[in-house]
Each structure stands twice: as structure tokens, then as C-alpha cells.
Length: 179
Image (cartoon, rainbow, N blue to C red):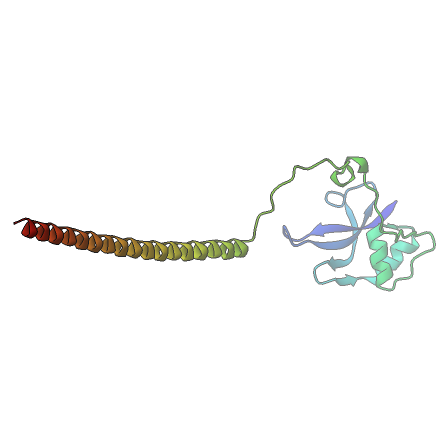
């Protein structure tokens, strides 16, 4: 039985396909090719098919692969009634229960949310400004207190001097009176 299928050609990472007719029991890479029916470039979606060859082999019973049948239908070829196209596009996954998304949810440890670099820099700048302002205020308070202390000491010294002077004056006066 013959099959109409695609054979991959082109370099690595840039696939292109030939549409070939070959024995259905052979692989597209190694099997003997009966005829070339055209080509397909999936990158540019360019399709070039030989209508005569395809019609000849379809009328003789060549079975197109699913992808070739879809390609032929898009290009407007009339397919025989025995060609079945599965257009559901739904594939089944083997062992779907083993997929990570189907596993039961585990309790994840709570992680601290990392701040964005912008937020961190803004907060750091705010902290630095607050510290600078606090230092300035503390320095001003210390200077004011120091001035007060200096003034108080100066006032105490003046009071002590005047007290000494008055004592000495009174002592001199008392001595003068005694004499």
C-alpha cells in the first residue's frame, strides 16, 4: 500500500518538507520513494504541489497522512470519501496524572516578598535623610545646652567673685573698724 506523506529536509532549525509517495511500511528517511509530489515550507507557509501526480495516486488508493490530508484540503484538492481527516486537534497525553500541574498542591513555605530595587532605594534614601536630620537636631540641642551651661558657669563665677569681693570688703572694713 502506498502512502502520501512528508519527508523532512532542510538544515537544523529550519525545517522544510517534501511531499512524497512511498510504500507505507517504509520510513520517510530511509524508504524507497515512488514519486515526489511537491514541497511545503512551514516558515513561509508556501506550498507547491503537483496536482496530476497527487490525483493519480489518490485515485489508485494511496493513503495520505493526516498532515498531508489537511494540507491538500487547504489547497482545495478534492479528496476521496474514504480519506478521513481528524480535525479535532485534540491530542491525549499519556500518563496525564504524572504531570506536575495535576499533582496535589503542597503547602509552600512562606517567603518574604523581595522589594523592587526602586522601592529599596527610596526607603534607604528616606532612612538616610531621617538620620541626617536627627543628627543635626541633636547637634543643635547639644550646642544650645552647652551654651546654657557655659552661661550658667559664667554667671556662677560672677556671683562667686562678687561674693568674695563683698566678703573681702566686709572683712577689710571690719579690720579697719577694729583698728
